[in-house]
Image 1 (cartoon, rainbow, N blue to C red):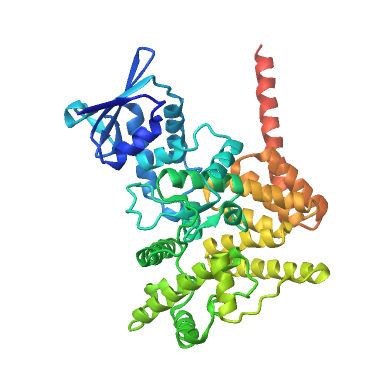
Image 2 (image 1 turned 90 degrees about the vertical axis):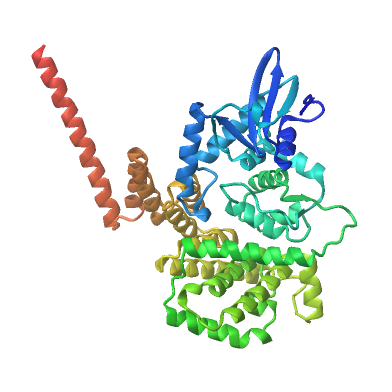
Length: 485
């Protein structure tokens, strides 16, 4: 069976999306100016001819990525860059006509794959679009967005990225883009790209006017299961930094009190908490209730109930309308307008300082994931140089987050150019990257601002000694060369 059409009828990525949706097998032939190209699909997934050099390269990168923890993956990984490049190539193809020939007979004898087709389709949704075009498409699609209930398990071997999970959880109920972006740890431009990618995968869609906002019961169960799965992966990659006795004490206290706590008390936040603070509080509680490695025999069912209740509290408080209704029903007193002037500034600094101190405690215990989450909140609450510098240090532990760490150190130095510790942290990172000249400049700034900083002085002296030795060696070689001549 064959079918044909032109890009005017259906763009290439739409054709691929439909073929994948019906799990088609065959060859998609593209004709442009007398040139023919072929894409091969088996059960809806793109494959490459087995002899194609790109097939081996992509397979090796996918295997390497598969050995990494899911939540440690970053869009800057080489395999994601390769997928983006393939999507851009496909987007640049401007065929005059396409034709799909269905059946195994149209496939070559040897195929390599499957390619991460879901990722290619997601990347294709934003390929070649700048931030303004992305913004226009999101605005044109609708004012409110919602996650698709009952979505079948994705065949994407790479799995969802952390920012995609964040968007899916926030869109548990319909939400305007502006509200989604508010308090989000993801920059707006990246958030909108993520939204369009998820829409291309069928995971989110515009909310239709007049459509019921309350999700079906099946979607609630899926929501709880999805979060439980994510928290489970998080615990595998970042185990709780608690001894079993301390864990059992915390759980016993929660189980004895949770029946009489409101949503805010259960999560441990104030009635004026921001979305970011609610998100972080829920993450901490969810990790506690899912940490089965501590052997809480006999309390599994109680912990499951506690987790479900925490999840209901989280989804209620993350949706402004449901939160307003809940506050009214439970007579929760939330000031119509918060503190102003000096009092507001003082409270903001106190919240930031608390987040920073808790991040220090997490980092000291080896829980870098939660430490980074808290520091990201702290720099939004009160962007102080020392908060940015510590965030950069922790991000620098992940080789894939080099650009994030550099950006954090840049913020630290811009926020307070006189902060010697920020200059020292930047210097260490530049030296780690092998950028010795930049490291030397930052070590010099550290010593100038803090003459008693012995470690910075020692590192600076070491760099200068190595440079002097290199210059002397070079001079010796030149002298011997000219003597020989």
